[in-house]
Image (cartoon, rainbow, N blue to C red):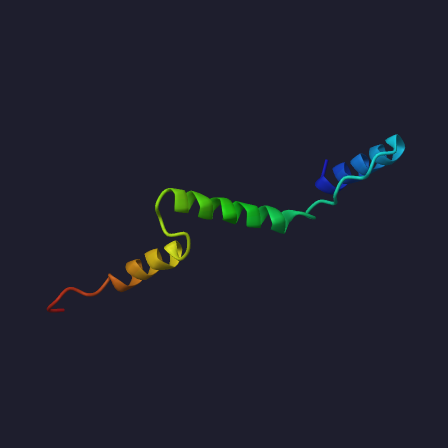
Length: 72
């Protein structure tokens, strides 16, 4: 059963029972992504790491520290 079919079945059951219908699939996706990002930032701060720019700093170290050996 797909997500859409499950949603329609749940909405039908809620209507039959006089309850509010459930939120549509994907209605709160961005909110969940924001909460996950906030959780990662919180964990970084509590572990003593910087909360922003860790990925960019790692990539720049990887790219710019790959200098050719002297004499080449």
